[in-house]
Image (cartoon, rainbow, N blue to C red; front, top):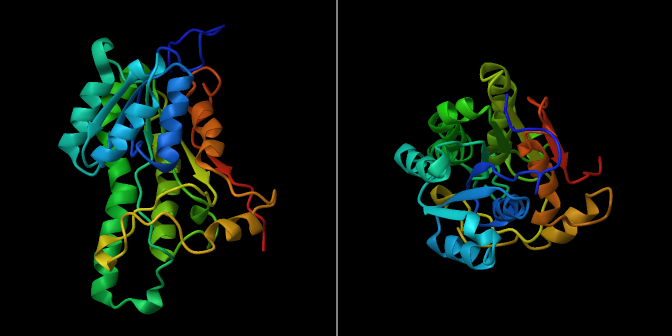
Length: 272
């Protein structure tokens, strides 16, 4: 496992080289900024050049000097390899990978899809939400193993309950739950593999399925924030920052040294 020493440190992630895919918006953006605040050097792979620029702007100051951005598609192996090269830096080491790439199905029902539209939508969402994470792990595996590093995947409450999306989104997040289980064993003992399953979250911008003609920029479904609060046992609508503590804990090679194969659920869902 990681050779980072125990004891007081400037920040729990100080000295770590981290890569966040899909780190330019929503929860991924909040996680990237949290890692920076805790001392990590953060490389963000982000498809939107505009979101990457906004992230660089908001990370200005001393911490911002530890931010790197790569604009490109996290489903592309060559782009992932480029991001890995940037993330390894002068130390030629990668300590942690966080996968936050994802698209949403806007609660699409199978009752409204014919087989052709179902197939195209399924290919798009599973390639984006599942295969991109597997490709990222595959590209980074040797570097993570050499560092005794770790991986954190982004699931959803949809990986546990029929809520928070339609069957396409939910099944993709259930698949990531299986990825955590299997790879935590397959990549042990050198690489820890865990996940965070955020519940419904406000202040996010969902990318929809292009194959279904859904908007890539719409930031909310009407009444969604209020519905989230009603379904939350604490009566709140979580914001992206509310999930970052779970991510930073799992990335910490000291605090989570013996933690692998687990998913932290954040969002306090109220049972029906």
